[in-house]
Length: 345
Image 1 (tube, rainbow, N blue to C red):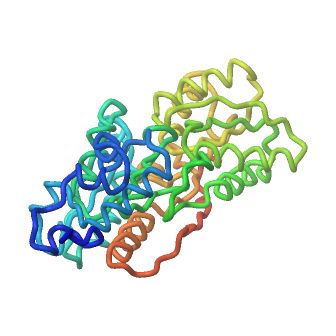
Image 2 (tube, helix red, strand yellow; image 1 turned 30 degrees about the vertical axis):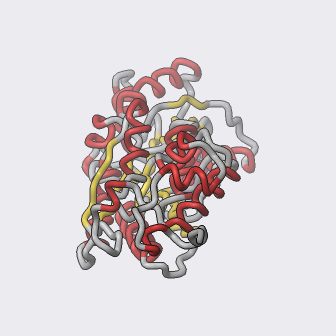
């Protein structure tokens, strides 16, 4: 008498299902199953679907997850930040985001693990996420390519801080800020202040905030019939803002306004403007984006777009907890921004 192939081995009193059993059921190689379990992006979607279906039928659990509670819940959540350690600890945005996540998780049983991941460690991070160590993940500051983590969301509940830049990277749950509108109100403010030569220091173009904030700046100048070629790019650090501002002033000494895609780059722009003997806002008005803790302490205090990063962290965490619990959650949440006018403009 043959065994019922539709019933998991563990339910029939046999040994626990193995990687080989999943491979046989899905009609693929053991190596392919391993790649799917470890979150490799080098597997076609139809093969991923077949392997995941086999995993569900056989009730296969990776070894580390099998050592967890019978419910298979670890009560742990990972926050993945695909940036350098230096950038994470120097940019106030991340501190505020983590604070918001912590506030949301304070009244739950979940603990938070933070994974600051360099490009070289992306495979290790994927294996950790899909190895039964966490019940879900939050991904902040994600980039295109290997840093997107879109493929991980096929096998693990994931909430992204921001939409994916590449339309081909399908993700189910995002919490984003209206970056384009924030850039628009910042640039409109400079136009209303009578600034004629308005430049921008844009953020990285492999990240949605960098792309959207540049688009918002261009939208306003195009509507106003102004030139929109006064652009230099930075990496959201003060140093890159100073370099970009120097380049802009060399290209066009008549620049009298600049929108910076974040406050850290605005601080760098301050230094570059002042070292030429120009004044802020007399000669050059400056507007940033974030409203981080340094903006109001700058000299002069920085006009900036308030980004609700604390709220963003809270919403991301609450969405993920509900998602893990099997509740219906919105696929996309968009948070609003507002302009905070100070002396720099």
